Amino acid sequence: MGLLIKALIGALVVVLIGILAKTKNYYIAGLIPLFPTFALIAHYIVVTERGVEALRATVIFGMWSIIPYFVYLASLWIFSAMMRAPLALAGAVTLWCLSAWLLIALWTRFH
Image (cartoon, rainbow, N blue to C red; front, side, top):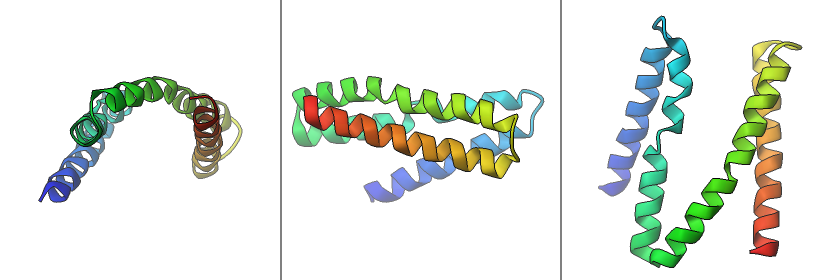
């Protein structure tokens, strides 16, 4: 049942993004994914299954995870001026994956 609720929340977020993208304030659609919907779910699961110390470590890692998102946004901004949108998005996602992989590798090595 919990998995169904999580899927419904995800679907509602996607619908909200789609609706906002069609308005005159389309840029707000970029803010919606940053609402901590999934973070709330993840943090609740971590704290109930692993405790407060695991939650605190997850929060710190979450703070560092802003870096791959910034890499995605910065690269998408640059790529969108140089190539068609699908390629720009694919390139930005690729750089997000690489920077996320690097973050995970460094976190597991030094944490």
